[in-house]
Structure formats: structure tokens, C-alpha cells
Amino acid sequence: MAETGTRLRPCQEVARAIAEALAAMDNQPSEELVLKRNYIERLKREKNPERIIDELPQLAGCDYQAIPEEDIVRLHWWGIFHDKPKVGYFCLRIKCPGGIVKPAQLRGVGELSVRYGQNYVELTTRQNFQLHHVHLTQLPEVFDRIHELGLTTKGGCGDTVRNITGCPVAGLDPHELFDPTPIILEAAQLFDSTPEYSDLPRKHKITVSTCPYWCTAPEINCVAFVGAEKDGRKGFTVLVGGGLASTPRLAKPLGVFIEPQDAIPVMVAILELWRTNKRYRVSRVKARFKFMVDDYGPERIRSMIEQALGRKLEDYPETPRPIGFTNHMGIHEQKGRESWDGGQVYYIGVPVLAGQMKGEHLIALADWLESFGGDFRITRQQNFILTNVPESKVDDTIALLRELGYSPFACPLIANGIACTGDPFCNYSVTNAKHHLREVIAHLRSVFGDEIWQQVRLTLHMDGCPHACAQHWVGDIGLQGTAATLPDGTKQEGFDIILGGGIGEIPRIGRQIIRRVPADEVKFVIERLVRAYLQERQNGETFQQWCLRVGDEHLKVVATELVAV
Image (cartoon, rainbow, N blue to C red):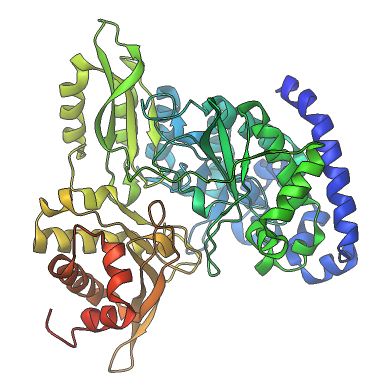
């Protein structure tokens, strides 16, 4: 890290100077205005959230009601959130750059879950672990143990660089252009250890991958480095300005080719341009990099990066497109490694329903992986992958998975379904997203069986609120939690239904087609949509293609059962 810091310091200094000069030309708001308008900016100036961790033992000795709300917010910088209801129990978000977890780390997280978290673990769409039920008094010892494991919660939330994601089979998959894992790990260490990058206008999401299937969803990240090749050289092209929440955007290409050694300097230049521009500190609503890309355009963003680097970037006018869809589930040959007995080595992708696991399962998997030198990897779709499995161990691995309640051959609806944390833990959510996703998947399997989903892909993305942690804008069927009013006037959980969205082959933000469907009716609405799709599809078109062809009005009619289908 010392070498990285030394190498990047001139780049940081130049980028900062240019960013500040450009900011001054743009009539930047005053610091006084920023602090007047933005409560979080005041909170950060009054006490650095990075330092709140030093007070954790003292805070843990307090009644949770005695802790100032400002300090509860500062704990977010360390991936610590109050579970709902706010009665002194917390969630911890543990970062895993690229989704890679060593067996000893996996066992440690499992043990923490069993001891402190009611044996419950969530896998997240940014390749993190989340623990819940951790009491305030237990936070210091849990935090110390996470640190001992070589993991961190720092930057799990707050105005930071969030967990840097990557293809979960980076370094293993024969189809990848090259292995970018060293870049991911170096960047994660750099940004976690540089104090300035814990004081961004708001969160910043980066993905780095050379997976030709674009499995990390680069289209919805603030900054995405995507594998590219030029004149026989392997490197990256760059997309900027993606993001979801209530104002979704798809990332735009910068039209550049970046060699691997330049990836981190370019990340730093972008981050400095974003960090030093006070325009995006006045309002939290507009404090995302996607709005800066909206305002300046990708051409000017590129020009500013080039000014910061002191040189032009190579042109790469044709942005590559993904070659298809994969979630890396099932059994696959690994590249570049033989097992101890000279045989083939495999990775095994395993679907996890709604991303929910038991801590004791992590422990069992860690023990098994350690026996042959495998790793555990978390995917964007809240599933996991076991790596380095010798051919002689494949059958025993499948047997262990089945004993624990998992299978690499599980119904693809499970692998392709995503749900946010939702109720009962999240303070923003108005619905129990994971429960309802389970309910919808069970219903579709009972109605249509399992075999059809081997030929028909359907991605279900279910969120409990507009924040879009489960990416409902880009699922085949997206569901956003809301309140529904029944005919008798009572209110219950409900969902808005979003159709036509997608990433990969047809990158597109979906549209709200039906609003406020009562939660217990959602599975029937989705059943009608799926049934109509199966009857009306042409030439093997996907669900998204069918939605776009038949149009919104037809989808509304189908979903509300106004005509027979």
C-alpha cells in the first residue's frame, strides 16, 4: 500500500488542483451555503465519521437512547446501521472486494452470525455480507473480530467508496479477457485507507470486470471498468454515471481505452473531480455522480480526466457489448489450475433464495473449502460460488450442498431473483421484500413447474422502497414496495410493478406499468404476465423483448385480467 500511495500521490495532487480550478470556473457554492443546506455536511464537519470508531467502546456502554442521533449516522461510515425497530440492535455490512472470501474469513463470519446474529446472514447485491440482531453492547467485540479476519466494514455505507465489485469468477473463468482481481484489491485498499475518500458528496460505486457477460451490471454503477481489447492489447473501456434509486440512469461510455496499469489513476482522477465539486454537496437529493455526468456530459468528464492525468486518453469509439447472459450458476471447468491429484478443477455456482443463509452453513462450507484450498465468492444476484473444487470432490460437494439445503441445479428463478433487506430490518422499507419474493417464486414454480425455467429466463427484482437496492428498474419484472389501499379503505403492503427494464443485451430503465398492487395479489398478476408471455412470444424473444413489443397498454390489460389471455 505504501508503494501505491507513493505512486498515486502526484496523480492525486494534480487531479485535485485541476478539479478545484474547474470547480472555481463553475461558480461553486460557498462552504457557508453547503453547511446551511446540508445536514450531513454539517455533521461531517463537526466530527469526522472516520473517528467515531474510536468511541465505539464508550458508545457500547451507553443506553442506545442516550447516543446522539448524529453519532448513529456517523456509524454508517463503518457499515453499522440501526435495525428496525430502533431498540438497540444493529446490522453490520462486511465488505468483500470482488466478492472473494477465504475459508477462514467465511468461518469467522459464520461464527459471528451464530454467536451474535441469531444464525442469520444475508448476501447482498454489492457482494457484501450483512449480519443483523447484533446488540449495541456486542459491537466492539464483533468489530474487533471482523478486523482480525482481515475484513472491514469501513465504507459499508456513508459518503464513501462502497465495496468495489467484480466478476465472482475472476481469475477462474476461461471466457474472461484477463484477471482484474489485483486491481480491485489494490483500489479497495487505497480508497479505504485514504481519509479524503470518506468525505465524498455521497456514496460512489465502482465495478471492475473483464467478464464478457457483464455480470456485474456496469450499466448501473457510478464508474465501471469493462474489459476491452485494442490492437492486441488487453485493458478496459470506461462507463460513467449509472445509478438507480428514484431517478435511475444508465452509465454512458467515455469512449476511451485504458491499459490495466492506468485503471487506478483514472479512478483517482474521477474521484477527485467528484469529491472537490461543491455543487453536489448542497442537496443530498442531487448528490450522486450520475447528476454530475448529466450536467457536464461524458465528453467534458473525459476532458477533465485527461487534464488531471496530463495527457490524452486513447480513443475507443465502439463500446463493447456483453455476449449474452450468465449468473455463473452450475458446475464449470476452471482455467489455469490442476487439482492435487492432477485432475480438472471446477467452480460451482449455487443459487440462494433471496440471499438468505445460516451462519452454521457458512461454517460447514468453510471447513469443506479449506480441505482442498477453495474460496467462497458472492455474486451480484445474492448467490455464492465455491472455487477450486477438484474433480474427485465434485460429487461430495454437491452432496454437502444438498444436505445444507442448496443445489447448483436449483430452479433458475431462485438464482435470478433478487430482494432487498426489507422488513423487518430496514428503516426505509415498507414491505417484507424477501418474504414476498419467496412467495412469488413458490407460486410460479407450482403453476408452471421447474422445467420451463431452464429454457425461459425471468429475473425478478423486489424492493421494499424507492432506494432500489434490489435494482427493480432493471429486472424483467421489477417490484417497488408501497402501500396499497383495499376496497374497504384499509391499507396493506403493496407493490408497483415495473416492466421493460434490463441490463446486458438491452440496457433499459423499466417503466411503472401498474401501481399499488396489494402484496397478496402480486403473485397472481405476475402469473398472468408470464402466462401471456409464454402464449404470445415470437421467435424465442425474451420476456423483456415481449414487453417492449406488445406495449404498455397491452401489459396493463393482461396484468389486470380485463381480457382473457
